[in-house]
Length: 104
Image 1 (spheres, helix red, strand yellow):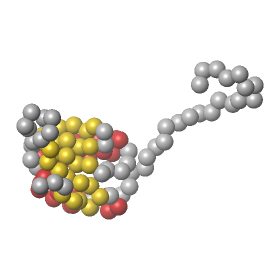
Image 2 (cartoon, one colour):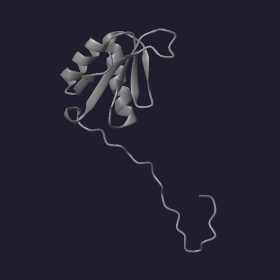
Image 3 (cartoon, one colour):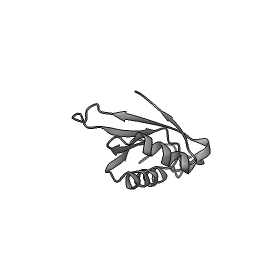
Image 4 (cartoon, helix red, strand yellow):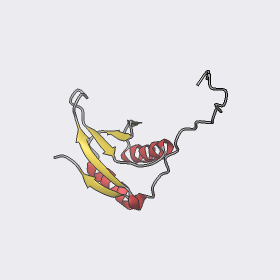
């Protein structure tokens, strides 16, 4: 808000909503393999994370380091380059997450 004609209007601090990260035992993550729009290259996708963006980035970094692969964290999804579905499933289950495989 830049200007208001209402003399009684009070400018409030409009802060962004902070999404609190749920504990791993309360989260259900989906793991899938994706090749669409990636020039035929396989990417392991992890979706369904509920929480802070920084916690998601930290989880993505752990998964990429464990698999020894590159990837990124965008739009609430973790992308790990290559087919690491089983390895990622084992890692997430050891961390306490509930995991479901998606797709064929």
